[in-house]
Length: 252
Image (tube, rainbow, N blue to C red; front, top):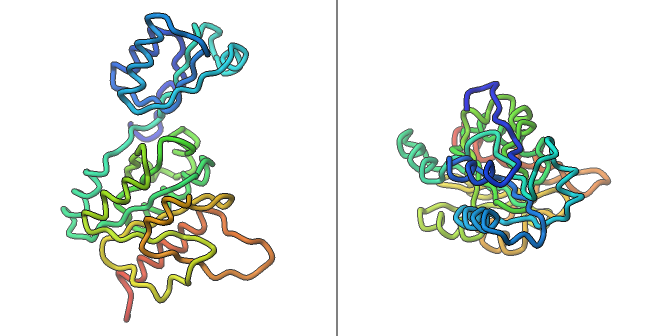
């Protein structure tokens, strides 16, 4: 999508939602009236399954609240404002540039402003892309695009079904992973050079236990003060630029 343009974010009605799926548009959220089992709804369910998309079954009152037209016919799809990238393209980009792969993976980041700010940081730190899960995560909305300050036009964001499995797959490509967590060691003595994946969780729940167990390093950013955690986008910035320092300025 060109900078400054937005697609319609809500698609309502059975035929309209089916067409949105079949035209290749990325559906972020799908709301369906609970108990719906007729032909068109079954078609929508099949299309959602092809995308690995979870359906939120809700009552009519909730659909009426979400609807912008009042003609939802029992189904509403929320469309991504920007297109998602592919991890394979991120890997290819790093190889083309002759650089070690640098990815930022986000777990449980549901605030669109945090997601946008992290995409901005990723761009400035030279990361080749950002990876987010399909569930329990902010998606590429217009608010995210604004918070990224234009970085979303240059830094690809991929969306995956299973973050832990994605980490396992990337390890086969020689990528090492470090996650930010309050119970780790300071990152300044870690070797964060080479192909690296930085994993950031929400400031509330942090990185999930399973995803954390897949990481090679667990880094705790030293802090002072009375509160117990940094904002997720701030933590991402501190860790990302420690990786930049080690890659580009160690020994300088």
